[in-house]
Amino acid sequence: MRILVIGGGASGMIAALTAAENPENQVTLLERQARLGRKLAATGNGRCNLTNLNTNLSCFHGENPTFLQPALNAFGVSDTLAYFEQLGLLTVAEPSGRVYPFSDQATSVVDVLRLAIEQSNIRLEAGCEVTELYYHDDAFFAQTEERRYAADRVIVACGGMAGAKLGGTRSGYQMLKGFGHTCTKLYPALVQLKTDPTWVKSLKGVRAEADVKLFSGTEVLAETRGEVQFTEYGVSGPAIFEISRAATSTSDPLTVVLDLIPMMEQSALTALLEHKCHAFPNITLENFLTGILQNRLGRTLLRACGLKLEATCNSLKKRDLQKIADTMKAFSLPITGNMGMEQAQVTAGGIRTDEFDPNTLESKLQPGLYACGEVLDIDGDCGGLNLQWAWSSGRLAGQLKGAN
Ligand SMILES: Cc1cc2nc3c(=O)[nH]c(=O)nc-3n(C[C@H](O)[C@H](O)[C@H](O)COP(=O)(O)OP(=O)(O)OC[C@H]3O[C@@H](n4cnc5c(N)ncnc54)[C@H](O)[C@@H]3O)c2cc1C
Image 1: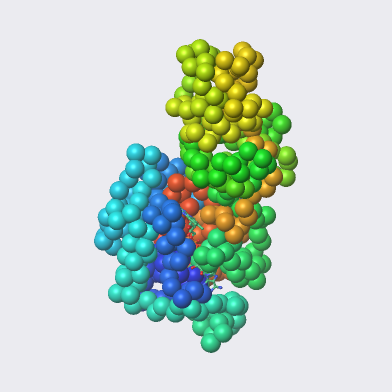
Image 2: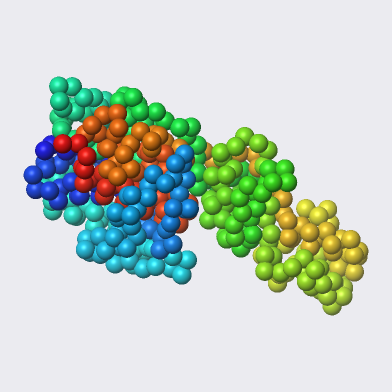
């Protein structure tokens, strides 16, 4: 059978390798960019968080996240690790469950897939963008600038819109819409949030371990604990990524509230500040929070409390200490937006999953047409879940079960 895999990213590479395990298949892999796996090579800050030992259904989102259960059952985390091991990749799991290549280089993951593709009978066409896909007279046809490819089965693995500079595109959605498929609303997930810049601007580059809550009025939409990074436009870092999906999915006014001393009760913190004040009455406020918070963060919080850094500690009233403790426990930043698809790591939303068979990933509208990866309406939490979906779904689609 002639098999066409469109998209040489994470899910497309594993789909092509899987399809090529059947020697009767002639597999062609078409990739728009000059190299395979360009986005994959940039994942995990260049380290590639390829999966997570704590993967389960609750880590995934979409109109119907249970859609991914059969793919995950058939090719879960241990299967993924075994698969990469036999490709020659050494991996290491961090205590959090996140798995990385032992080399700490995302390119190692791309390389083992690329080498396996080179050794297989897969025909690779890089720098080859499919501009149109259609079905005519019992065959699929993929049009590129240079030529037209005919196939008996097609796997659309074009990814989503996120990370445009690394290859994010609408292409896959458009291709599938051509067969009558429909798309949910698309919005960025795992993305940096813009906030009122008044205080964060001076904190650019500062990192803090915090409890993070996302509020809409008094309702908590999402919460987590982890690293927050301040930027000139707002907040970033793993903890912000984790709550970002809840922030981008609504147009309601939102506030992110940071507890910057998460391990301490408010009363203990107030007592600590009172002690500091009595023990060091003559130091200026510039150094009041030294040793408790990162220096720049401490000074910014004191300014946010309306205090002058030149004043000495003995000028602080009880209500000032209370206010400082309150601000450290609940530093509020009104959200003004997000950094958009360009900067997002993943697209929330995608082609509706109820239009595909979850056991095969074959289209219910067009026999012989399959889809996998981010183009479908499934996205995962931060921490290797999106790649796990790419591996699980790519593996299942590549088995080409379904159409005869
Ligand atoms: C900066 C960044 C960091 C990330 N870090 C992580 C991480 O550490 N862990 C994690 O789990 N997830 C991470 N992700 C998300 C993860 O990379 C994606 O969810 C995953 O790559 C999706 O796989 P995919 O195969 O669906 O799409 P992609 O990997 O994006 O592959 C799609 C491919 O299709 C090609 N293509 C598109 N249209 C066409 C066309 N018309 N013709 C031919 N080819 C086409 C594209 O060029 C691309 O190579 C990160 C994303 C970004 C942007």
